[in-house]
Length: 413
Ligand SMILES: [Zn+2]
Image (tube, rainbow, N blue to C red; front, side, top):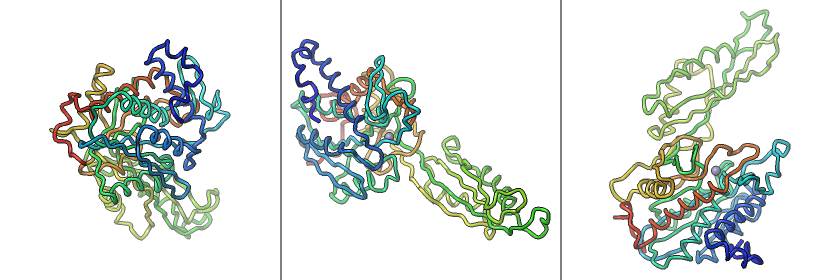
């Protein structure tokens, strides 16, 4: 969807309201258009094609590719020698239970300055704001340097095996090293810009299957109760000492199931499921080793399996070319305060782009209604995040913009 099309037919009225008002209307209309495409993972509902066309109209070279129904986009606009920044996002959303909503989740509606609809915060609001900021930069500046990428997928809310992971692989195979990557996930808490993420914790799920011997509960001496064995070992899981950043590392039992669940049978099988969210100071292997360590004495009594490992990532502050500093400056410029920087929340696609060189930061609207019924974003918040993204782009690509973070950025032709 081209911005120009949104205002077609109402140019006279909008002209009188001034440029800012026009931009505001376009931004709102764009978000509504994104929400109205029912893009539940992995379906993109045509959004990748729509965004590809819009980026193309802004001078980006666009490449799209599909894997297992997931659609991905890599778009590039080269302004000249200078650092490389990517905007990253996902067009897919989680499902919505219609009965729980007071509006149609896939037909954006505005009530009292609030836009309701699935994805308004996670993260179509971010994408709409990023597109508006991108358009503003390209249409108003001719003193830009560097290379600007857009990286989009329709597989962030799912398994994430065919989305940003593959995009990052493509970039690597093509020898492209990003200096910085900004992800528009909703990170703000009480006020837009009050919180950003410079990393995410890791996550891994474990399942322990305890095997015993079934029998009548009245004759326990003839049985081995698998639930009792599990009950003895669970406390060991809960008392593991996580020396590194204990506040950011936590094991939670997520399920305990027996094979029978009848009151006259001793179960021969008990499965305990758990998930661990852990600090970036641990690798998944270290986490696995710690769990094995506390269970090892009874190794024969159970079978331990692991799944859904998501490695953590972290972008520390740097003395030069610090993208975190640039983000802080951009936020301060717009809300008059510096953001809190942390790594809480679930996992994100940031883990695929972060590496020894690429600085990944996540910054977006408030996350108070993500994945909930009646997900919403206020128009004021949408405008504010667009202003923050615009500041980031100006500072990063503007040759004449001052920022103490641009020096010594890796330069590419
Ligand atoms: Zn998201």
